[in-house]
Every structure is written in C-alpha cells, then in structure tokens.
Image (cartoon, rainbow, N blue to C red; front, side, top):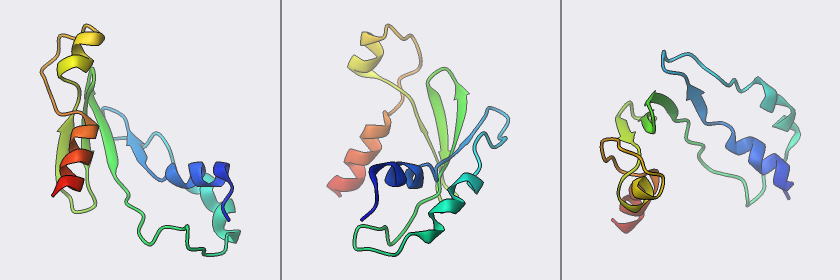
Length: 101
C-alpha cells in the first residue's frame, strides 16, 4: 500500500506555470517512486494540467485536451476575503459541475 507521503508526491504531478508560462516545478523529483508496485489503490489515469496565474486570484488551466478554463473567486468567498475582483467560478464549481452530469 502507498504511504501517505508517497500519495502526496504523486499528486504533485500538477505542473504550475508562472505568469510567463515558465515551469515552476518539474517532475524529476518523482523518479524515486518508480519502485512502487501497482496496486488497486493506484490510479489508472493521471491527469496533467497546467495552471497559470493570470493576476490576483484569476488562474487559467490548460486541460489534457488543450481546452482552457478560467477560475477565481466569487460570492461569499470573495466577500469573506474582501476581494474586489471580477467574479469567476471557483475550482470547486467545476468539480461539482463535472460530477453532477
């Protein structure tokens, strides 16, 4: 079975890009996970999504299909943090929409 820390390291496959599109993290540090044997708990598919900070809380994600989505904050979250930015869907809004359909 995978150790909790190993699972967290596998989740780091998400590549984060800066405002200019330059990689901020690389995957080389995950090479030590090659020794892991497949188990029922391991993923059949690993999604690699590039996330770019546009400005403030506005982020742009490029999905494996090449489509881009923009997300940020709105509603009670924006009010709680007193943010005066353009309302944009929260990441959780996309999760709810994708699982509801």
